[in-house]
Amino acid sequence: MERKNTAIVLAAGQGKRMNSKVQKQFLELGGKPLLYYSLKCFQDSGMIRDIILVTGAESVPFCKEEIVEKYGLTKVTKVIPGGKERYDSVYEGLLSCENSDFVLIHDGARPFITEEIIRRGIQGVEKTGACVIGMPSKDTVKIADTQGYVAETPDRSTVWTIQTPQIFEYRLIREAHEKIRCRDMSAITDDAMVVEQETGVKVALVEGSYKNIKITTPEDLDIAEIFLKALEKMAGI
Image (cartoon, rainbow, N blue to C red; front, side):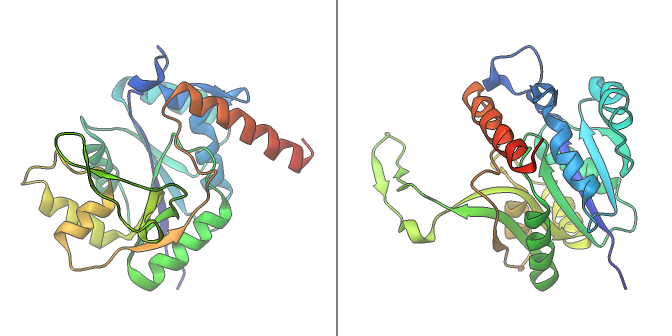
């Protein structure tokens, strides 16, 4: 039986490090809103049944009219307001899922997700129930102590930088989020941490792409422009 895979795309962040009056997910990249690119990838994927877009309450009309309707993103079945923190927005997205088997939780500020990444992620979650997209670190990583000195240097071969989407069995991630909400969540930075803390399920690492960057600072947007031009050249656009 074909499984229902739902993409939850998060676009409720303020993007303060971008130093822009426009929220980063709505900044233009190649003449289109940054958010468009990840939504379009999920739209075109035969492995994704539907998309739930989570954004700021004030941005819901804009997303519906200027992104979803304008670009014909028919798989976006719901555009909903998020919460105060990222994990609140994820939870709102989970509550809006209908009969989903697997959910792919993705940052709308990562425009370079690909069909290949989606495919590898779904294959990973079918085997394990929980997986995250990431890449082995190219840099040596230092763990700092509270005084700002090096406390530890982990073996680089064991260090990954984590990306999105993060992919889970729906019931697993829904139950994990519900359990953890009664406790302090201030240290939670991604959904894998919720599963790690609340279940006995191991989270698998699945290779993404070094181009699957998150647009956080103006420098990231400059890099994204270079990546996009290279992709357009390869496609003969």
